[in-house]
Length: 239
Image (cartoon, rainbow, N blue to C red; front, side, top):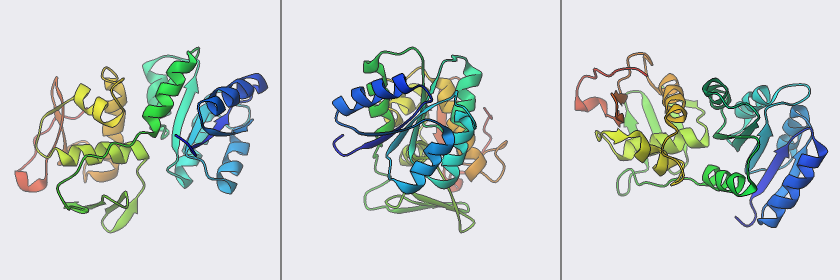
């Protein structure tokens, strides 16, 4: 993780000091911000690889800050919240976060979540393939870009990793646990709600009719299946 830059966004000076000391000790380069507004300014002026973003901030909230970050950047975002409900998780992930962690947490857990958030899975779509097309969608694998109707669609880093993993397992019924561990890492497996949110976001961005998906299909009680349109008409259940 040498050279990885993390921006810590929290309005509590003591928390920022602890985070800076812990993350610097783990080999990260750390900067901090006291508010969402300051974080957005720093992201415009400085490169960051990951933003550790508190939900409860003065001024614009962490959720709104995350949305604004996503409008301008695909930097990894790990949200920190004191709330621990499915709705809070959905709200954070819907705003574009790659993951979230609930206070209080052990520093070892935080470091593990950071490593998982930074990790990019790299399954091969097929040997030598760099561009994959289905319907009106074009996926440029190496460039990590997606176009729909020849217009670029912004995916978050984890959305892209998830799409790439699904494509690389065309027409295979994939259990939730296998997808989570392949895309997020071996410490994951039971966070089905995470996956549902990300699948919903991918469908909204890629499917002609997200409520009747053609490509990203639900396997009831199991997980998901990616199917190229040539494989036949889809009759998939929605989330």
